Length: 223
Image 1 (cartoon, helix red, strand yellow):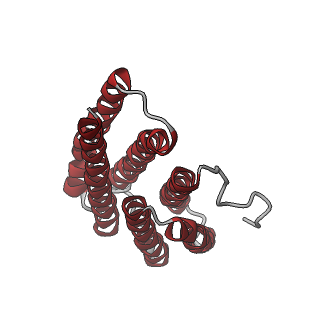
Image 2: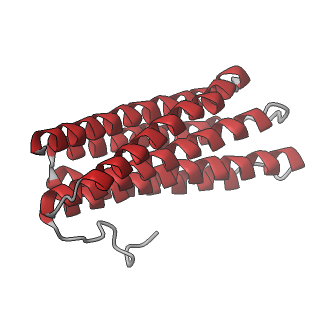
C-alpha cells in the first residue's frame, strides 16, 4: 500500500512537470504571436489552452482520488498540498498566455509602431520563462534556495514592466496609439502576473520542504 501511494505521488509530480512544459510552450507561442502580429499562431495558443486545462483536471482528480484512499501526514501531506497549489498556479499562467494571444488578435487593425514596447515585453517574457523553469526545477529538486531566488528574478520582471509602461507613455496621443498602448499595458500586466505566480510556487516549495510558510515577497518593497 505504501509503495502504491509513493508511486501515485511520483506520477502526480511528473504530471505537474509536464503541465509546466505546456505552460512554457503556451507563453513562448503567445509572445511570438505578439511580436509577429501572427493571428494564426495566436489562435493556436487559444486552442492549446484546452490541453492545459485537461492536464490541470487530471492532476486535480488524481489528488482527490489519492486523498480519498490515503491519509498522508507530515511531509507527504505537504507534497500533496504543494501539487494542488502548483497545479493551480500553472493553470493561471496559461490563462494569462491566452489573454496575450487574444489581445494580439485585437491589435491587427492598429497601425502603430511599437518596437520599444515589444522589446520590453520580449525581455519580460524571457524572464518569465526563466522563472517558470527555476520554479519547476526547484520543485523537482526540493531546492529551497532556488525557490527563494525567484524573488530576485521577479524584481527584474517588475523593472522591465516599468520600462514597458514608460514606453507606452512615450507613444503619441492619437486614438490608435492610445488603444494600442492600453492593450500593451494589459499584456505587460499578464506577463508580470506570470512572474508573481512563479514566486507563489516558490513559496509552496519552501513550505513543502521546511514546514514553514513564509512569503518570499516583501509588501514594503517599492513597486
